[in-house]
Length: 399
Image (tube, rainbow, N blue to C red):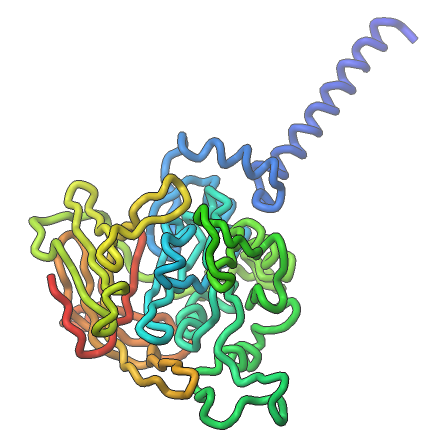
């Protein structure tokens, strides 16, 4: 064969090979399945800081880059139960939650339900300490599309291995608070379900124990932490990704809240403070308004509330909702509390340095909680993190 022809064919083959490699690289790193390819994921994440924020987060309206959108559009929302015991502070990963709910678990000790979706796309977020589920936390999680990921470590239940019939004595656990039984009845709790239980169907390394997370030894019950990337990927492997088995994105039927741009005004609600229970000052909350950033800075038990990760920032929110809920309890000998989050009640929304008074309503477990002003019109949230404080009816809010 002519030497010139061989040379041309060689260059042609090399071109086709490199083109194929480039196309394959784009398919893996620039298109779908970014989050399940670790090297491609980190390569893309390195570019995020330099990109414009053009994509709307469906959970809180915050703006993100196209790469972050491509990552979250392989996933579905993940709700994580995180404790707030004083020995568990500062928690890991709360600053990367899009929405956070806070409510009493028992004994005046509050617990968080943190929603991860958009802000977690740019990082593998260490989340924890992860604790047990409560009925009302499940009710909130059920708002975020069909079968969202629900991450917890056990839950209130009536199961007893050494009791007659395998159940606890009557009155030890009120049927209304049996979270594990509810998850079973919903079809969420099984070996490959969307309820990711660190004590049952999720193991190392997606959820692991680290008693030295805070640099010193902590009690075993405060040591469960999770990896957001590994938990999201586990959900995808189990069939709980962005689309269902029929190819329908989870967001198709999601009832998004309304969002608006920042509009800071001369503040009339600069310092918000309240308690959940009397004589439990370690769980008292204060939010201080920062007009320069149009955010509220969180304090818990009189101290700045920080995230142990990401250089330990103080937690902030663009919107703080005080959602007044009906409290009942303790309702059994295990001292469980019961809070009704399906129905309606009063609410106060703090944003832009102002307060809006109105109502909330949630028609069913899977229905979206809606927040209305005093005229009955649905409110708009300022784009960015949202904190929802479920405070017992009748408590005073000082601002």
